[in-house]
Length: 228
Length: 228
DNA sequence: TTCTGTATGTCGCGC
DNA sequence: GCGCGACGTACAGAA
Image (cartoon, each protein chain N blue to C red):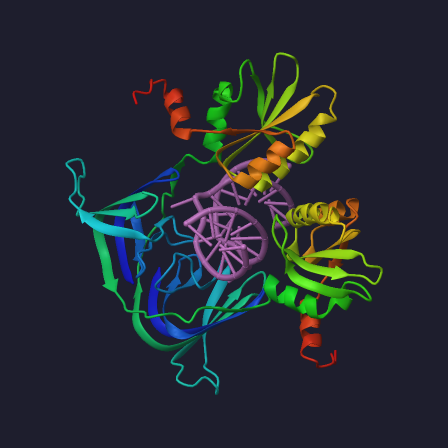
């Protein structure tokens, strides 16, 4: 990874056009070709180029007053282009980082879904799991359950229950309801937190909302009885 | 901005829990308090903390073998916490960057909408603009037009036409259609690029799709005839 | 301050 | 490779 602190200006042409006026920034060049420009606030770069791309040092043009170095970064597939004019270099260092083992996560939607699949009783009594990620033409349904009467329950699992999730579930219900093997199909919207608007919309459409307690479900999973 | 290259491990507790095993990474500490951990690929940090937050150097615990320095970053509002164990520092430098003038953009949705408002002929003949950002109870409609017969056309403008945009427009149409001053209301989904699924859904709902050519519209705006 | 919608979103997973 | 959905989405503008 190469780190350059420099006064520079940047022009981008691709899906849109952008311009960064001259200022002092961090230019980050990563081993995979990624180039990113950071200011001293916020975690997102001001501008960037994703791999696969190549960086070449080019000759400054006649109009490039005070430009000590000029870079061109070109995306191999899209043709997106970044032109970097460097006016002054304050720092320039390179570092070997090696391969990163990556981030281990616990508590994302996949974990919720897994726990809920093991604990369908949270949703209702006497329900059985048909399968997780039940495939349909318009995408997979998070959980598909059956009740003793032979009816089907489609469950949409979200960490945060938003109106989008209700729309998504509605589309699934519409499609699944047409299948005589599954009908009648009802919907359950399960999330750690459900926004009022989403709850209203869901209820209006006959979709039941279930609020999930991740820590409690996690506790049950481990088999240990909760002592508090 | 402080740049540290170090072998470190990171633990995050907040909306979820994450862990980064020991490895050599860039630790970026920005003037606003932002802390981010970068590996040598991809433009997004592996882990981070957003301001307002405070970084404190704490004493390594007894279990912290080989830890030369231990940091704690705490979010002022949410209580989210980051624990950083540093095993070896390869580089550590600080830099004054000053205020950045920020990014200038051209070609985002707002530009598309502005151009389309000036060139409603792109959507159909003999249409007149009622207004941009026509307010409704569930949000503003991008463009509202009228045809000579007195009917209304609601236009949803997107850079990339996705299924979400069709859903959004559908909600508007449902609402606007109830207004006797506007009815009958038809919908137009206008975007630089419309995904097949979105097109299918739109067509199924009687919504017409229009693909926009930003460069061409831009050319017409400037008044210059296109020479190619 | 909270809410809402866009984003060069980025990224991973399945087909 | 494409499509789709999640993300500690981040971020800006409006209410």
